[in-house]
Length: 338
Image (cartoon, rainbow, N blue to C red; front, side, top):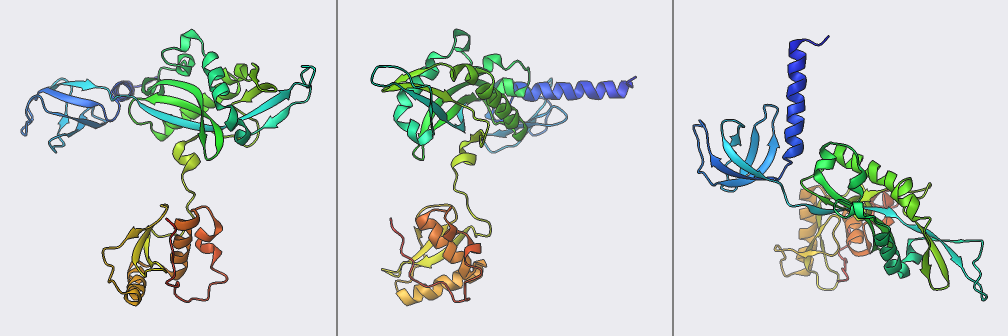
């Protein structure tokens, strides 16, 4: 049997969960009247909700720079939920193509096509996805079938399956409209739900419907049993930067001797304000600045390659040079192709 104290703590926790679901981070706050706070701010002041603490106080980042918290029952204020923002989750797309012979008969053996082949059929696949939606999904899409009364349901206003070309490949996309910011736990729940819809729910029905294309029919799969994942844009497409690279380093251009700055994960370079106008002077200065930053010659060389050839190539990984590097300073012959 629960004690009175346990019951009260459970009620408080449920109340806090309710408040945090109803009023997500980044909701807009407008003050009507402040209570007994010794440091009042003017009625009509506006700000952005940062968080609700364990006492139920609304901690606000006010537009005037204040950080005063508001208390329900003491202060009067209005809460406006943040405007939903588009949030996308990406998944690999495949299809089976069944061609027709010269007599119009369908082949019994399908060809498996990947996202690169499917790029040419983006329009037909998108049209089929839209046609597969049912009237009940008009307002909230796949969230119509979510079935849980939790913070994910409160924040994710809608979710639909669509397609998008990225990196010369057609991807399946769960396009969501989200009010506020999803916590890591909420994102995991959303991924699991949409992954289930792609495999056993909505997607299972969709992959059984033929899409007419030139020469035959396509059966498109949002989910596959092998090597499949659903990821955010950052997880799926951000450059995979090797470990051990500094945030930035200095180098020089081979052609002009200009002093430049290279930033980890970014393509190209930034001209440095410390350029001396002298090629040899810039070479020495780059070495000195890198030494002050703790950047080794190996790291500098990897940064140079990464900014030119991409951060996922072997040359952008410092480990690539560890065995063969003789210890000399990085040559001052960096030439960035714009």
